[in-house]
Length: 140
Ligand code: DQA
Image (cartoon, rainbow, N blue to C red; front, side):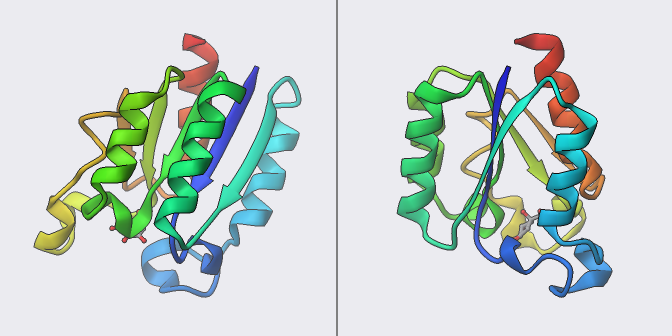
């Protein structure tokens, strides 16, 4: 079972970025925990601040992974290209947001990703990634 985790802009700053919203753990720490927790899963992790790199990563994971966990971060609210990339590939894509985007600013209510994803987990902190793994393990 291969799961690709893809994170968008500013998620490289988790740990120090607005900790009251996103928590104080780095993603690297959390990713290590996930790998230990699910030794049966072969994980890859990619983060980029650049929209086109995220599109390319989705296309590559589209042929290399059984399931994809995607946090497009701010591009969720702006990127037709990321929505199109999800629609263009076969593996299920679970959209994850650390914060509850529904409880935040109105510009975060615009979303180009959710309609193309199999489902969305939002507001459950980093735990959302683990819940997405559980879903993919049950489904794939
Ligand atoms: C986010 C929510 C987005 O609105 C925001 O732009 C992010 C992170 C989240 O994980 O809560 O960068 O995707």
